[in-house]
Length: 314
Image (tube, rainbow, N blue to C red; front, side, top):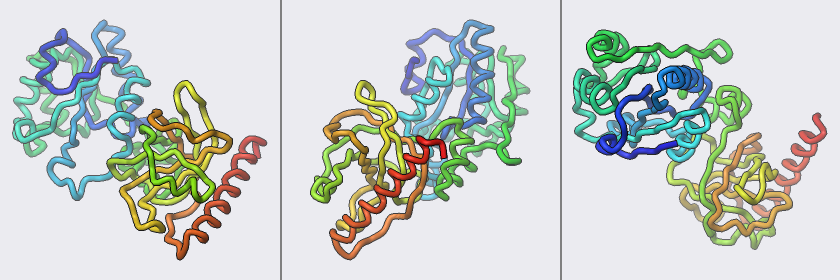
C-alpha cells in the first residue's frame, strides 16, 4: 500500500483513482462495506482504490477538548485500511487553509483536479467544506460536469442500529468488548512499540511489556484479558493487561502494561499488538504496594481461568 502525507505530494503520483473520503475511525463493518465497493470499482477501472483522511480530524481541529477519543491510532487505521484492500492512503493536514476551503472548491480543486477522481464512494451523510455546506446532493450536481461517478455506500446495521464509529466508541467506553468485536468484525486492538518502564511490575513479580499511549483510547481504565502478537516472535500469546495512569504509584501518562503468560518480557523496541478479550475490573488505587501485588495475582489467576475455559470451549 502507498502512503502519501499531504495533498501537495499528489503531484508526484499519477492522476486518476477510485476515491473515498472520511475519518475511517475504527474501520468497522460499515466502513468495510464501503471499502468493498471501492475495491470493486477499482478492479473494474484499473485505478487505485484510494482513501483520503485527515490529521488531525476536523473535530479535533475545531474543538479539541470536545473531540471524541479515537478508536484507532493513525498507524492502526492505516494498517486496517491496507488489510481491507486500500491501495493508496492520502493523509491531508487539516489546517486553517483546508478548514476555510469552500465545498465547491473542495470538489473542483481536490476531488477533481488533485486526485483526478473517476469514481467517488461515500455515505449519504458525508459533509465537507467550510461550514460543512457540502453534501451528497452537491457532489451529485457536479459529477457529470467534472467526469466522476458518484456511488452511495450501503448502510450496515448492528442490532437494529446503524453501525458507526459513534456506536463503536460507546460500546468500547462501556467495556463491552463482544459487541465491539461484532461491529469491527475482529477483536479491538491497540498497537505500539514496547518501551522501558520503571521496572516496578518486575519488582512485584509480574514483569510487563509497556506501551505508552499518546492519546487516551476509548476504553475504560482497568484490567483486561488480552492476546498479544509480536511479528517474528509469537502470535496470540495469552495475558493480562492494565490500562491506565497507575494511581497506586503516584500516577503516570496513559500506559498499557501487558503481562504475558509463559513469555519472557525482553521485548524492548518490538512492535506489539494487543487484542482485548474481556474487561475484568476498573482501575483502582491501593493503600500499599503489597495490596496492589495481592490484587495483581488475583486478577492473573482469574484471567488464566478464563483462558483455560476458552481453550476447553466452555
